[in-house]
Length: 378
Image (tube, rainbow, N blue to C red; front, side, top):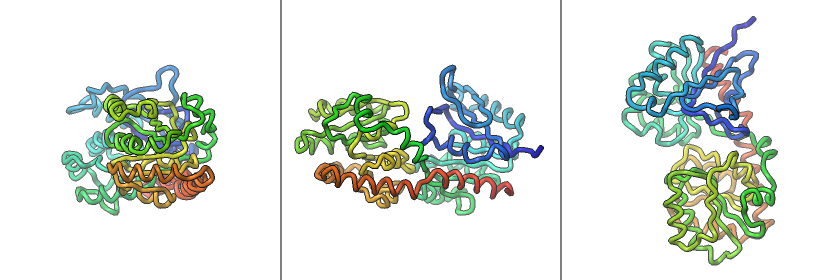
């Protein structure tokens, strides 16, 4: 029997959902044929419990480290990861985010696994000096870094700390469009499940309630125009540390009756067709997966004009606005609200066609397969 190539995919925390259309770690698992590869999905923190969903990988491993274990010297995690890798004799380790890259940078000096792949998801992931120092001192010829967009790749190389055009490449994020379309609820059903009025126009956003997502500017922009559009509401799906501050802002602007903070929703992309217009006012993004989900729902899109999202918004024929510029954001929302239903549909179809032809999950999987086979000799 032919020996299988053994791949370990390390993730900082367990986050497997029933729908893997936008779960890029699971899509990486799906890139590798089980006739040739044996993939293990491993999580530093968390587990599915009794009722949770599990990875589609051949094997799974839950380290179940506590949050305090992952701070400071991290002696326990280093030892447990080292022991696990030695026992399983992996050929490849794929590390999602710096929290998993960091221990493997140290451990692979001893383990000497033939290929380690670090995936960088956000623009400033290596902005801290000590992270760049680790790369400079510990990344050797066994390492290859993958950025989720060309913009992230350019930032990594600009640090001049060991990332270069030979060991750093971009594999652009994608979604399983056909599968996601099948999961998306029709407009009226989505609105009913979310508790939204059926007879209003909806400006929507999906994202964690954290400062970098720019929701405060979206709320301010909506407040500036809402009196001109009495049949329009703003809906934000997501949860995070900014909720209380955003709620106060909504109250201060006297628009509480027209803004819905719905909190986190399992498989939030299934509800996208509850929206008429999709917005993404982020200050910074690695790529902006939610923007692709909005396009997949055939919605016209408005997004911040930042390096990672600029090619997407321009390619799809959406509207790009300056980050933090509430006036231009308000103008963009008004522009779409002034269109009739058929005109909005034309804009939405343009976005859908763009994502369908430029961010296919097939290419995403093939790019990862090619990367691994190129480095380990096919």
